[in-house]
Length: 66
Image (cartoon, rainbow, N blue to C red; front, side, top):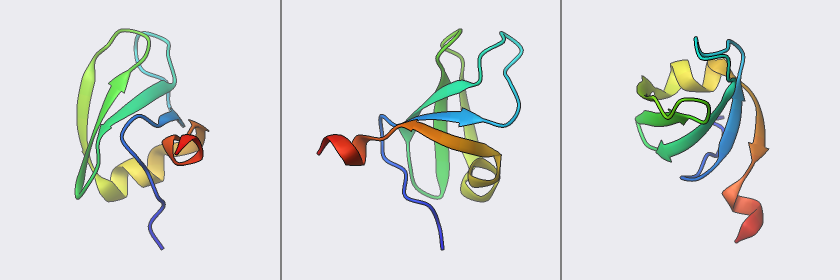
């Protein structure tokens, strides 16, 4: 079953970005995800299966704040 992600969620990925940060903010959800590095503001588009596989944990969820 696919995990639930929302725009604005902050997630920690398994591998760190070259800038040294592991934290990313989800800016687009769907078949493809756009995520923004919280260290250097770099944005990346990933297909859903690759994104879900690389997520280690959800740090801040927008679902809890609704």
